[in-house]
Amino acid sequence: MSFQVFGIAVSRGVAIGRAVLVASSRVDVAHYFVSPGETQAEIERLLRARDAVVHELATLKDELPNDAPHELAALLDVHLMLLHDEAFTGGAIHWIVDRHYNAEWALSAHLEVLARQFDEMEDAYLRERKADLEQVVERVLRALAAAQGDAPTPVTPRDFGGEDPLLLVAADIAPADMMQFKRSVFRGFITDIGGKTSHTAIVARSMDIPAVVGTREASRLIMQDDWVIIDGDAGTVIVNPSPIVLEEYRFRQRQSELERARLGRLRHTPAVTLDGEHIELHANIELPADAEAAVEAGATGVGLFRSEFLFMNRDGELPSEEEQLAAYKAAVVAMKGMPVTIRTVDVGADKPLDRLTVNELRHEHVLNPAMGLRAIRWSLAEPSMFRQQLRAIYRASAFGKVRLLIPMVAHLSEVRQIMEAARKVQQQLTDAGHAYTRVELGVMIEIPAAAVMLPLLLRYVDFVSIGTNDLIQYTLAIDRADEAVAHLYDPWHPAVLHLISQAIAQARAAGKGVSVCGEMAGDPVFTELLLAMGLRSFSMHPSQIPAVKQRVLRVDTQRLAAALPRILDSEDPHAVADRELAAARGGAAAVH
Ligand code: PEP
Ligand code: MG
Image (cartoon, rainbow, N blue to C red):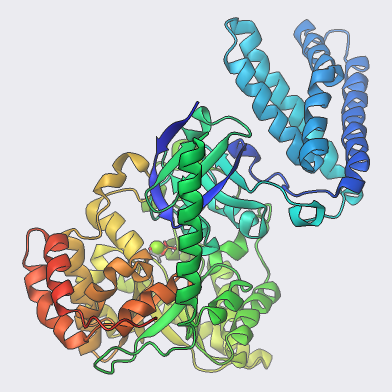
């Protein structure tokens, strides 16, 4: 049966493929393909892990003390029965043989199928056996992890004659888990939870693959293996489409690929407006390896290196100074002399350090994480960790142009503490004989308090970077990751526009650098508005650079600026901007 699910469009384009349902708690399970020649060995690996768990449970049962509760032995019996059930292993083996999934993936895919069958059972006792099944799968996954050395070499579907593209469907994906998908087999994402600027959405955009979040129930409605179309522009998901709809979307997919290729030709064109203003188009990156894509897309620097991603997926162990130095140096070297703005770690809110999903974090661990010990607050609460990161950043400056950016600043006292820490670190490096050069200091403007008192902050810093994702969240009191209030998350809100415009004007008047590195900077819808406000430095996902550059090439900033007062004075800035900025547009087509 064909049906549609509606969500929030977060990453452009069309993806067509088969649904792979993954439980949020198992998103970190390895997903890769094994070659047809290795499927038998992979089945044996799965069976060995199963046998190891059988052995473990049987031993546990044998060794139960006589006075152990009777329920414990009964529970072990249920688990052993499940492990011996042909349907249990047979189902997983099907995914290995037919789809070439690795054992871990096959097992969790089969668990999803079985879990749904359990959910639909009338009998409450049987329904509750789902928890046993999950525990058993968990044990087998652990046994597979323990025998990691036997794992096969991943192959791509192309290596064995093609495979339908796969689209990941999950209730929720934590940003740390999204990182694992950067080089994954998935060609699109659908989640129940999330907003346009949730970090899960941001990482999907950085991967430049279509994604729809905030669907509320996609992971319940879509079945394993369903054919699915993700329309990343409209925010819709079409499940089991008719052949006619499928054909229409295939056509649109080809069109958008052509459009991308066309825009790609702008890569080496300098971003200069019709009236000769040079515009910096910098890249936002999450890992040093992303710097390559940044150069490839024509970025003239890194405006935001979200260093927190180096701190994730590490089982609680933080990266050492040397590890951090290696990562920062790699990005600096890859940017070939262009500036690299490294933001100190911004964990908390929807970016927990460990594998907790956003919901778990929100409901179980911290009352209000977005307003809690996040970003610079966390860094200042962990001074030795903070100084270690600063040392690595300063040492990276010996290899190119490095700028230091501090997230979530709201107090002058924080700036003073940061400067004091930076002074100490420089002294330590000098004493230890480590090379470093001057590093400009910048703060992010993401809390309204910082925007309102910008003139005071500007006395201390070299530059500011406006983080519109959080600035909107805190100005409008809208959780950026909460789909329930996503309709109120409005970059066009007059209060937001006034804060951004004022911040740009004040920084420029003070002769300090100012850029925008929130998602607004990479959305071509806002390019002209930000130029009208006087912004000359934008930082965005590398994939957005060509589309933004195309806008830059077509406009005259003086004509745009003349329209700004009417937009800011309006009760409906969006409508007025559409009208006024269209009238001010130069109209010269940049790409032919
Ligand atoms: C922002 O808040 O706009 C920003 C760029 O930082 P992050 O999205 O990582 O919170
Ligand atoms: Mg932010």
